[in-house]
Image 1 (cartoon, one colour):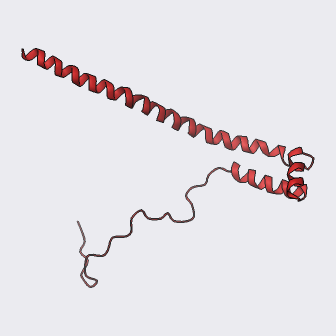
Image 2 (cartoon, one colour; image 1 turned 180 degrees about the vertical axis):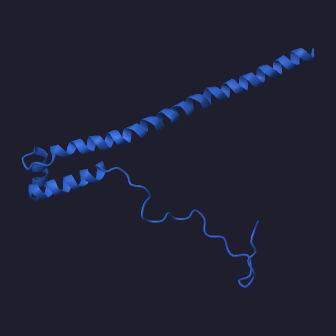
Image 3 (cartoon, one colour; image 1 turned 120 degrees about the vertical axis):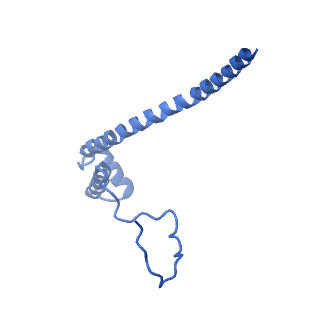
Length: 122
């Protein structure tokens, strides 16, 4: 009789594990695939942006003429602005930012007296 009860309980546990795995494993797979695709997409996007530069650096380009007419500026000004934007977008990222990141928590208040001796911790 005890074997039947143990069998029913083990079926319940196996069912719980399978139900959790059916939800968790596809979610993890999706996250991994998204991360890998995203990691490959960013350099490809930068390469695409750099390749677009040749299409906006001539005063005879239709897009340059249209933008110059709409903005009321010369073609050279449009070319300079577009190439500057494209060059900035196509740059590879450089290390850390110049500004220090903001701390997540404020510094803890000092708990010892200002004139108390400082002891070394071994």
